[in-house]
Image (cartoon, rainbow, N blue to C red; front, top):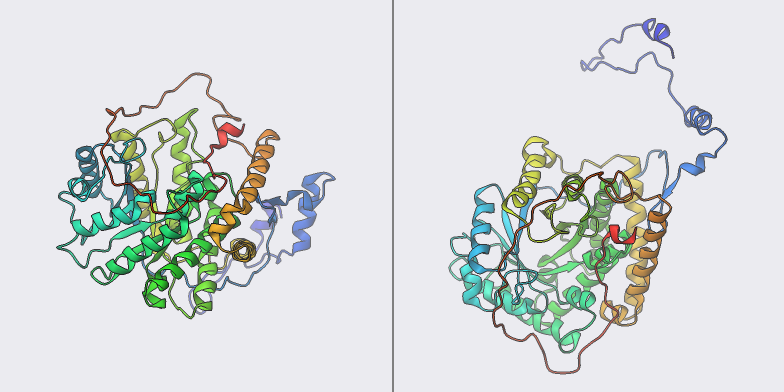
Length: 486
């Protein structure tokens, strides 16, 4: 329609409700009209050539008609928990960072524990963790843990720190399955680790009724190169394994599901990530419903490490902002954004401030937390949510048919799926279908180094996580970076 014909349209008049129909006077557009315009633009190529596919082969069409809403209950609480990762190797330094984050807008902290001080805070005792948390009001500022095979010990340390605050919403985040999958071995039988963690969880459930006990995470599959459906399936299988362990430890069935948090990754592909988070609620609802439990999923989402680059690391700010948007719009209950220098080394105060303020701007200025489910009604995202949920359910059933997540890891079932997805990523990067900004495209003409912090190596003694019996083994799901596949 040209400018003159547009000007000749009669002015729109408000209806009885006072709403002015802006499209009045325009002929309704049909799918055939759209296809004709597209065909003209494509110059001989088929409309099907516009269809993209996820790493696992799910189609993403160029146009979607009305789709039925996915069957899940969206998160109803406004906003989300702005959670910051604390990994300064010294207890004193970690305490300073935690207090600074909480004073400057963070709602909660995630304490990564590593007695060797290489990947987290060098803590090996209840006294050491108490030093990290000195001055933190645990009943108003939730603390989450990331302690690998020391998870059961660390849970007791955190419980001791919260002794005077029984209503503290602690996130113990025991997750031995992720530690096993990532490292490829366990210090003692994996089943024994599940039993030990469940015993600690069941013991702490009564004195800390608001505490969550396990983190059922699929991030280990994502960081190794796996696709979205596999990540969801691993998280679902881990959740079921942890729920069974808690039930065997005499925790009531309903409480077992209430005390489990799903862990997922936030990627810069925000539409796909939004659909993944929504699909996680669909899968959780199906599993919980089959077990006779009516409890909505609780999701902690952390930004993807594999998407971050060492080359031109300043671009990581864009990736992290997109990931944060996806977490907010996808309905994550807690969001952990990494820093833009994570691929290079330890973050400076500036990098930590950027990570924290990105979330604050998304929440307070962009107001992304004001709508419960902003993707609802979008045919594209509703369809993609449904397709991801179905694909994840198929993979979850395959894992369970193999004997559960431990058996599926040991047999290499999960590793083979990850390797297939990683190969597809490598092919797409090589064919320039998947671009890595600053690496494969728009590489900087001059070096722009990003600052990183340096710390004196710190190491403390810690109890051994080893349990009696032979070690379990599986093909390790080692983390990758997309820039290394280029």
